[in-house]
Length: 302
Image 1 (cartoon, rainbow, N blue to C red):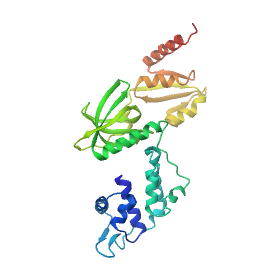
Image 2 (image 1 turned 180 degrees about the vertical axis):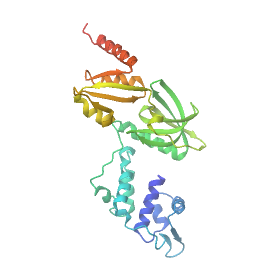
Image 3 (image 1 turned 90 degrees about the vertical axis):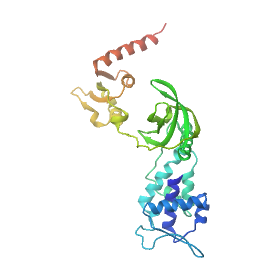
Image 4 (image 1 turned 135 degrees about the horizontal axis):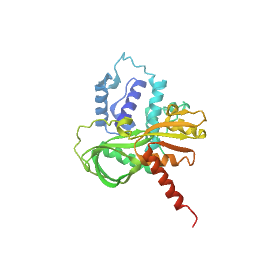
């Protein structure tokens, strides 16, 4: 992967006075041409790298450059490396830990030496998620279309998508790409994707970054008021924060929050058993009563 390899090359140059392109190519298991492109990108990013040909030549950072060459041992760099290593929790390959081993002897120990930051980006669905991420990342780098079945509340559809970004947001993984089925940029939740496969190449188009604001992705359609029993205070704090409710004189909690769809409201209220009462909106209160009656009838002894 280009980004983590470039971070690795920079870390090597900060630790060693001079290295050769063949040595870097062997370390990072890529071609010398790839290393030369990475060096050009680092120069374009403002890192003053000097290359010298002939006997005794090599690649080095310009003398007097102000970045501390012990950067790899700083807390800032440890945080960066810990972030890279956290990707192993979803990649299923251990490639990032292997990258640290290639930087210099014992480099990976720097990560495990800080016990205070533990990052795991996987989920309950790691076994199914890791192969999807690997396939999608490869398709993004190679400029290949992907096809898959997508399962949404409106039903199941087959999609053909130009993939551009993998996004970790709201404790879940998403694909941002141009959907040829809908002719628009869309955000797809990976857990809703099945029958994923790579397809043919495509010509990349200008890509806007996704608007990941809550207002855009989860627009408020229903403003909810509910009375919650005090023993569920912990749950309101965990899911919606301390500002989502007010403690009433009788100890109950008056909860107010915006929801995107009524299905999630009904399911959420029902999940409290008898510990929650929906107050508003009135039309959903009636639907909830009807829902409860259907459940009661289905579970009566016959």
